[in-house]
Amino acid sequence: MRASFPNRFLWGAAGSAHQTEGNNVASDFWALENRPGGFLPERSGDACDGYHRWREDLDIVRDLGLNAYRFSVEWARIEPVEGAFSRAELAHYRRVIEGCLERGLTPVVTLHHFTSPLWFQREGGWLAPDATERFRRYVRAVLPILDGVQWVCTINEPNMLAMMANMVKREKREENVAGAMPPPDQAVADALLAAHRATREELADIKSGWTVANQNFEAAEGADAECQEWAWSREDQFLDAAADDDFIGVQAYTRVRIGRDGALPVPENARRTLTGWEFYPAALGNAVRHTAKRLPAVPILVTENGIATADDTERVEYTREALAGLHAAITDGADVRGYLHWSLLDNYEWGSWKPTFGLVHVDRATFTRTVKPSARWLGDVARANTLDPPHR
Ligand code: BGC
Image (cartoon, rainbow, N blue to C red; front, side):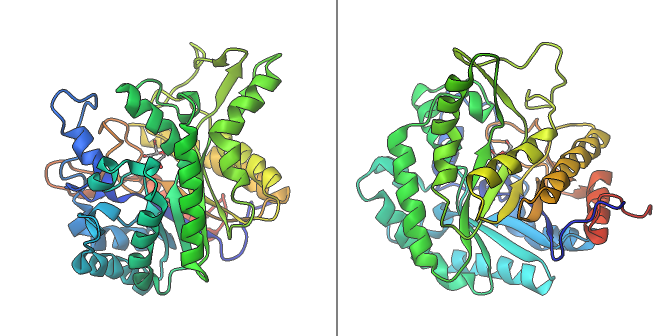
């Protein structure tokens, strides 16, 4: 029997502003990258020059046969100086939204994808007393350009953001699997929860939710209680907060095993990806099941899933298995509305260009895009809306 996906399923690819656009000079991450003696090995620089080449990128998404595109609008561009909103930047993002609609692509718009304006950071970031108000003011400025958008992600991976707050404090990259990182800074987590609620109030009729980094925590023998506690602070509190949201974004890549003393290292003999994470395509189905169990009434959108690999056949292998797991979860009752692959482009991976997640290769000198076979494969799956598309 053919593994068909639900009707009107969204099939897309994703990226974020800082990772693709280039020269996001007013942002806090740009400052971090460019600080002399900083701990990040590589800079984003021109990134994929997506700021200028977004039309080409949307054409690629459409021509592949996908029907959705996730991207973020950049707060640091829209409000580079506190209170000074750029009409030109808002108009830029409006053109991108219209570009999606004109091509028949459903835009999935993220309002905050890890980066903030540097001024916001300098004024205390999420811990400043008026952080929520500042974010709300930015959301209000963006609201008029969202006409026709039905999927808005308020804050990308608030759990990761709160964990990164702790990591940046320590000035080390440490373990780069989110779930193995230091616990979230709970004050930052609380501020993000407040900002999320405020944003949803502003968005009113627009479908909104946030996207959580699902870590597939697995308890080692005898460590059930430790695992539950570990998962609560790093993941579950962010899921439970979405109980009244219009959707929940699931982002899953790998798993993290928890022992009595915390996260266990990836086993020596495990197959790994370019980020060093365990190759674990079952992560997606498991994450969807976990989310559906915690939030039975909330529709799920897979907002990220993918693999950092230099071997494109491995990308197909991983994604096929991940989608099989997703399909099984849907068959068992999970209400999943779409799948957005991370990422469309080989984009900047927060300090490094080496982990290539893209369906599309980008020449770092000329910015020429080259569609990989995995992208065509995913496009075929999308067109047929089944995991077993007819052969080309
Ligand atoms: C983030 C992306 C990132 C991806 C792979 C997610 O944590 O939302 O920005 O590139 O995972 O690490």
